[in-house]
Image 1 (spheres, rainbow, N blue to C red):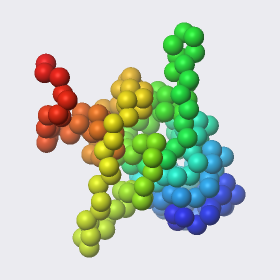
Image 2: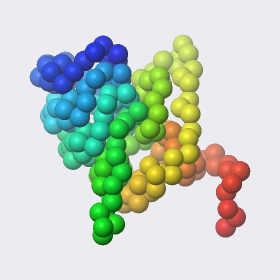
Image 3: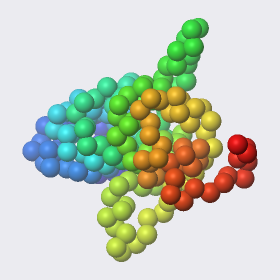
Image 4: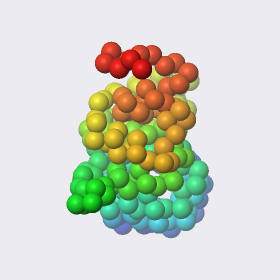
Length: 191
């Protein structure tokens, strides 16, 4: 359902439909959902069967991230693509981190994920569904980027289990997660 000009109202209709309960993979990338549309989806009990959720380039911001972080309606979610998000970064005078990525870092949802695409920049959709199509074509791997701010936020999480990540577009987290094929990064400090 990517790039179909879907809005919050369309997501509300989808979550009310009988089809939603049977969906395992949902790619809503490149739709102007904004935080309101993502919040509607996160609040929908009918989203409980989702394993893969594509929200790349949906104008996802802090409120949408907070809705995802607080949801208990997606217990089976394993793949989340939120590339191109508009999360902000703030810190209180006491050092408490604020913003959408910080909310996700404090969420148990982060511990469920095996694939996390969370870079600021976006690209073509690369969800769990791409694995299904590997019979006919090899999916392009996401570009691994250095993003110290997002990586730093996620590393502080007590829920992140990097060794369980199958795919991540942040170079630091991908390297931590790639325990079977671990290779030294060029700038890695010796321990």
